[in-house]
Length: 305
Image 1: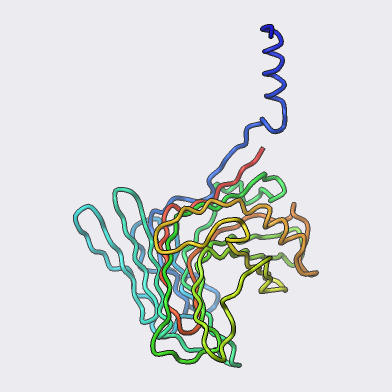
Image 2: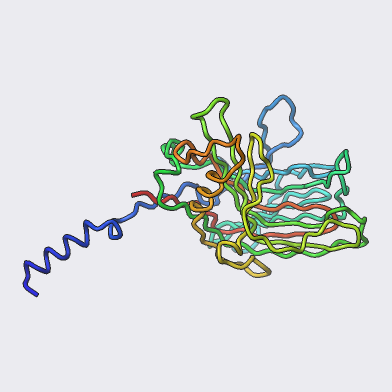
């Protein structure tokens, strides 16, 4: 092949769509400091407390936990690491700071959780970590202008039944990673929660709702605004996290596009109207189960042309 032919071939490869470089942008701050959201402040105010250090970019959310809320973080310095602990009867959070970075452990114990809310609906209790996205310009970048949206995290998960059982109608739990989408092109504005299960714990009991079942597709759990859909890691071709840290790296953009296009009639189905507003991950439980999840290196990476 002549030198001219080689140059022409190289130029054509550079111009081909498949060869165009993609820009990758991290939309989250790395784990630095954490603060705790106060769930009992009324009037729609956002009040946080007990930060592990200045300018925290991550928040601990404690939704529907019974009894006492989490204490402020207590600091304990040891050789080569610093540990922060916040505790409540039903939940605990441990933030471990080492030379290798931050690691967060969330734990819940269903022995302290009532079976039901009023109306005999199973009571869900949540323990989450969450963050807003950066840089600010990506708040204006619609999903339609992305070629991929990767959720990347190291996670471990261990679950078990509590004893003695209370004979709750549902006994289950899950570790999740999630994004919050916002659509301000319609009035009123719409919010859409996408939750991807990355681990599960299930306790089957006589008379309780079945939780040990396979999932084949998206599951819409809220069909009015704010909307919500559940997804499951095995559908994306990856096994659930278990006892040791497992790296999860999945492109959720095709799943978001599917969820929006096939969503409830009241949902805006135009992908160009939806933007990413933030993320949350962590765990939720119902009934007679215990669950502990460990999190490290949480990232959300957008790819654009």
